[in-house]
Image (cartoon, rainbow over all chains, first blue to last red; front, side, top):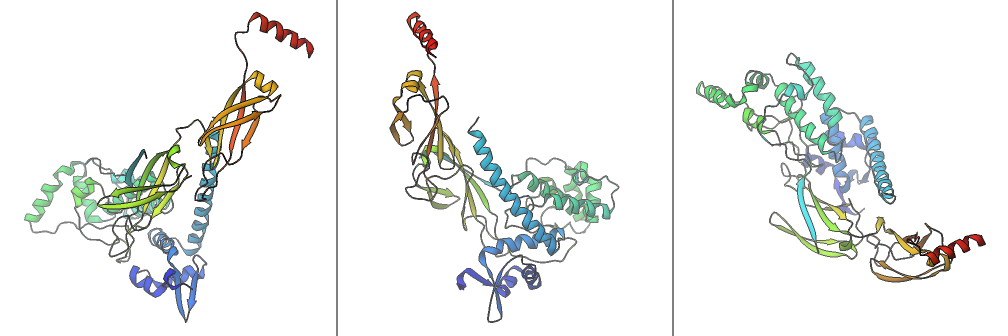
Length: 96
Length: 319
């Protein structure tokens, strides 16, 4: 594991004041992946924005972990569809 | 390189003027709404308009800000009272505050309901109307746990406008944001609408959080006769009837120069030919190019002479 790419969950929670139970629940629900080393849990730095987003949705809108999972999947699909739509629009322009 | 860059936040400025804002209308309520009605209406709209659920939708982000502001005022009994009393005559709010101060009472502290940042929405952008009535002040989540959360600074968005011919080759460019100069390599073949992220060049972090990022979106203006689909280019080429029927050599202009092309005899109208590797550079693939597709359009001769008409009539009799 390349240490510089990961942050210790404990440090992340201290810095952001996000409860570690919240992060651990994200692990439980497979919403983010983690690395474990010597009983320490690490999260990938690239997942931080995603954790913050889920934390806001959880706190602001009271969305539970099942809901966060559904939203994550739907946003993923939405982005894919947007990319496809963009490509189709460009193709359509060829016939204009 | 002829280009134009413009910077803007994810959220368009809403501070246009100090117009009266009907917070009840914003939440779709009337003045008799109970605290429970307000909470319910706010939650319903927040679920619909939350910026994390509406990425890249500036209208939703703007509306989310408005409902936050409306909830901030209407869910606080004291603020609601002031709003109900002075709302439409909000210009007198200062006098009201002054009178209150003289009476030795406390001013209203401002509470913000939303803490965010990673997606770039700025919860601090309350309207001037709000500022004029309630001023600045405290920072906490109303109706929830009080907490100080470190968040990444606001992400900034910039648009860089370029011509299609500008991105035939990778270009180095220096852009200035505030006092910072950023040396940027614009890769050949970048797509129209494509966004690149420059880490740490966004707004300052909140409560010691890291700086936001700068997102540059390319707007590519097609200043050529070619249509582009990713790295492939498409164009139409007019050929004469005689070249189409008998074949021949034509010269066509590509983005990288002139190319000679053999037209096969009896070429039909709308025939498509592919010139391999004569298209657009592939993004981040050095020396790799897409293809150029040419559609032949046959020009039929006009204003036929008497002799030509006779010959075409003769030809038609042979078929």
